[in-house]
Image 1 (tube, rainbow, N blue to C red):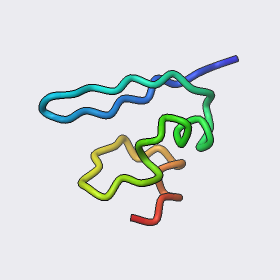
Image 2: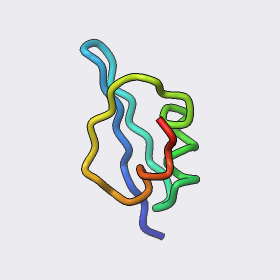
Image 3: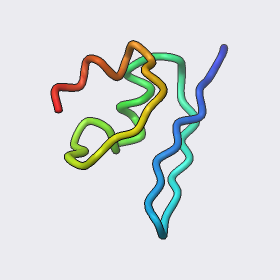
Image 4: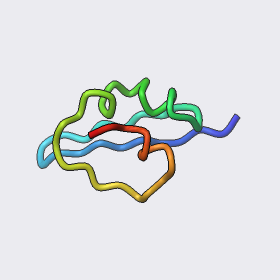
Length: 52
């Protein structure tokens, strides 16, 4: 099974999350569903589903 490495960083912390290639996999890292700041991403289609 292919997996993606999701990365979320601040100036002080880095979260690495290995998950299946899906939105559910990205959500399992528990960062994106509730994030309200500035998100820089690579325009992967699954990011378009987040409302904020």
